[in-house]
Length: 179
Image (cartoon, rainbow, N blue to C red; front, side, top):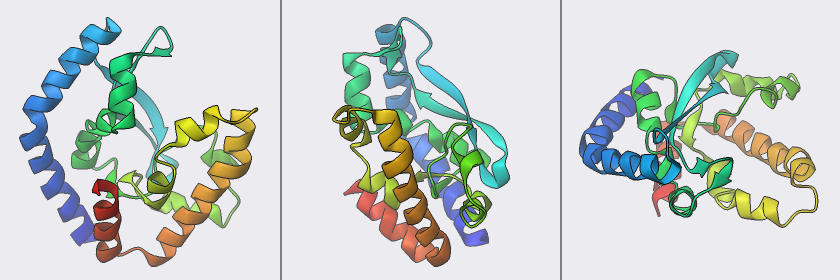
């Protein structure tokens, strides 16, 4: 959708322009907090199953979350560098959250149609599971719970989005994400 891409370019550009001083400050704090460069790079699966590098604020030191990292993860501030991913076209504001390799490989044929979508900064599933880390810490076997309960529910919600997607629906999801 051309209008969606124009929306993504316009708002990611001006979002980065407006947030740049704040982002730079957060990266400096994260660099001090983690004793390393404050940006986290990871390979994720994007549209049509292509790999891309996602950008986030680093929140871990020695594989453990830092207090500052925990705070910015809870507030989703660590996701703001993904405005770069949106601007360059790897992602969109709204779409299924990009996952690491392995999860989308296990999709059935019907669910693989999700790979036609650009991954998003937010979606209905990310709103519902905004406290996913907390949900998983309450489980006896978090990995199994994620694979058997949360991931299938996210797929169902993302398929629903795939069928109903529109710029108006995207605006509603963005609104719900912010508020």
